[in-house]
Length: 225
Image (cartoon, rainbow, N blue to C red; front, side, top):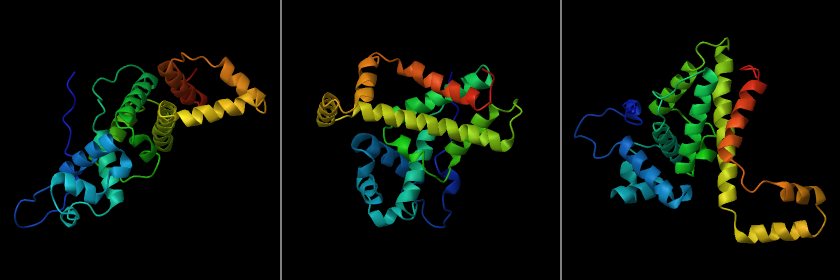
């Protein structure tokens, strides 16, 4: 099924001004910043770095972006436009699980994203569309408005924490692994050693993630077990 047409990220926030058509846009700036973060990591992203990628002076971008925090807001909003909502089906629980799975996939695509969504960000049009669509999955429930918002916020928090853990395991440095092995071999941490020995090396991360989301929804009393 085709994706819903996306609004230009930050389009509703563009400043109106008389005179010549602007040479850049927040959409373009956000796109370049996301590409830069995907390629080099979030530490490589700054207004100056984005300006260099665009071929403009850093001062010229301040017409569109007031600060580094606002640039991060635009980046988060842009990738929030990657959700596909017209494929959601089933019960509210199934739809929320599908949304969480999409969020996990997006955070893996943009490895810098998970920590950012755990902080307070100014929502743009894509983020607001995500929230509206997520809330629509709970429209037929008896939850209050506050409970619905808390549910969506917790889904994001759980998903981002899960992805941060996944990525940290993938990025583990050999030195850290060696140090851990030496610590376990010392005999000072018998319970930790046993836990590692009993760990399943072929854990189904998709299954673990699905169970985690379902357990939250049911444990919080949102849906029946």
